[in-house]
Length: 479
Image 1: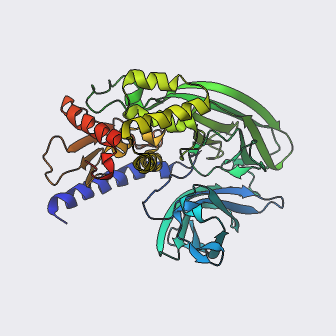
Image 2: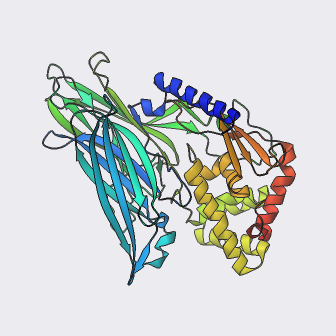
Image 3: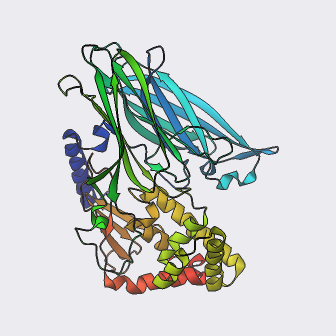
């Protein structure tokens, strides 16, 4: 590693350490839960993981863990008529008061059996759930899944808190979020493990507990569902003007601009551990927070406030299935008027037919069209998994670049800057791209929000890439 890279990584590590010590990093904020990210790596198992501390009916502290495993990301061996994937799962529970003390480590062996050979392409999930017995306290939970056929592994970490149910101080647990799709064959509540909620989930439930052992006065619990102004637009072309610092595209999401969707107040008079549930119907696409706070003073308890942030996104997110989901990313390939006419079609069948005509009219050959479609929409899904933040990953600047140009040859990250290079010549102005983060990543803004520094010099490159896609030549050359 050369001295420049060493210095860069040292400065980046130092900044992260300072932010962590100041208590501003997302991992240092136990009050607002946001779920895991996708942690996508091409060729590796895909897992989304959450762990929530709750108290059972007998008053015993537990940690409920849930992991959504994407079936198409696994390796399968054919045995007779079945396709079998063998997985190994390791769960570590670490007490934060003594990080060197692993108080629990469990190993699970999981076999997934399917008869459909197309399972290797499926975005369906297998949900792994377990309950762990622990004492009160703050914990870090490390979840590692290993695909035994490839020996590739992926790891997620999260934190949770468990109050002492026998303490005289009243406390709140973390909030567990669940969703239900009523149009499915057997609708049931399932854990939401990520910040992103697919639009097909039409019912949301939030579950938390209150330890109320002080009977001197009623415990008041206020809950609210809030929505925030946020950027929902797709990325503008790379040769357009840069975003204005006052625009929502630049700011991303404005937590100072909130709208109260619903608020509720409850009073608990009797002492004890109380399980509380709130259920909401389908919400429009956007960014939300469900928050709970009590009338406990901050001097009495550090656990008087909890929240769960989430975003409702497209119907099958992060997958692309519906006619509208297939049509929307074509904004990067179509002329403006042509795209407006396409999106004005409301009938799903007519919209899907128009999308198919667009591709076939430009490429001509049916076989090549099928290959180009697969490549294009695979990139859209991968962009969703790699660059998702307060909006769909394909709508972000890195997502647009990834779809049009493919993965960069080189990536350099320097504090709040990122450089993508598609050339061995790192000074080539048409093959190297600079991204910057307009806002520091903190507990109040926990997103990777990179904006491309646009330039008119990119006009020819963008035009060239669109032509490669529309002619089908993208299958022979990427850039």
